[in-house]
Image (cartoon, rainbow, N blue to C red; front, side, top):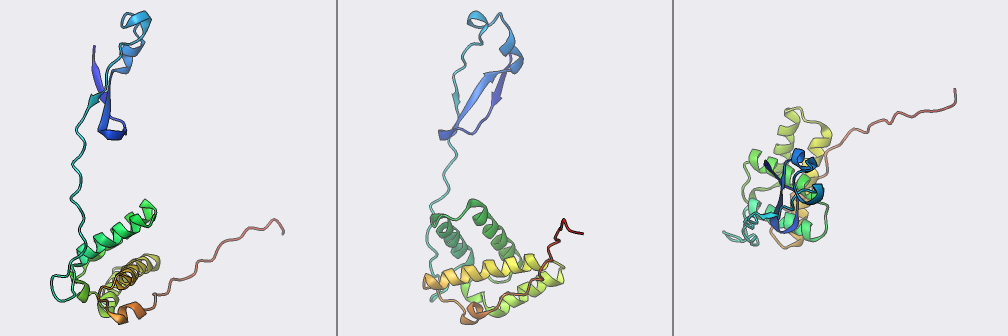
Length: 175
């Protein structure tokens, strides 16, 4: 008798082990042609992520952008934002942190944001993508200001880059 392990999403990290599907139809096994009951095998629960701590200023009023982003994403989760929205923001911030020279909140300035958006435009990214990066970084800066972190005032006054309007194709039944 072959045993196949099928992992399904179950609470508490329980996975299910059953015999292979071919053996489920054999009349000779189990009582009255029914397959034997196979008890579930418990698998260890994944290790919990380390406890998230608030972004702490290392220098006079300055915090790490990485820690600040983690705190902001947690705030979005607590406020009930969609997991897809949070993933979208996280993806944008990962891309920004990987490409940017800014590692501290004090380094996230209006000039730095303009420089980054210019690089995206030079790489040929779509205007909607560039606008998404702008909105994400502006949302982070606005949240940081509401949380009383020191944010560059010029950054908060920046206007969004223009996105061309798409003409919707309309259909008519009239000739």
